[in-house]
Length: 99
Image (tube, rainbow, N blue to C red; front, side):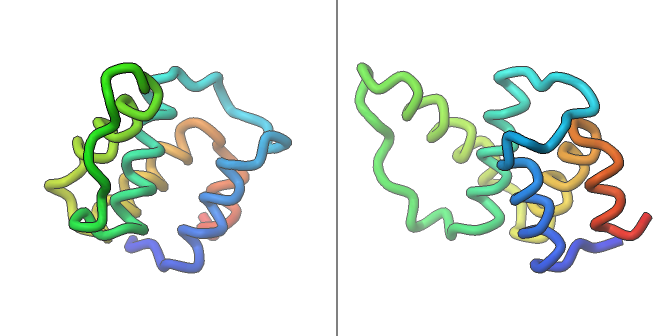
């Protein structure tokens, strides 16, 4: 099932809301993967700024997470984001998808 842009945005709001209960705790790597997939799905990769400097560790990790998703199309990135969100958040994501 392909994810519509509208449902993708609803799920992204759920994931970004600190009040949304998690099905299980997420790791830092999963958070970075969500970030990279979201950026890949919403921003064209040719609009990515240069990699941050060596002392901007968080910025570099986010940039690397975004760059790691370069091989995916916008639709593939949206689907991968939703799949990971479903694993981390659970029922609320399934409710948005109508599953």
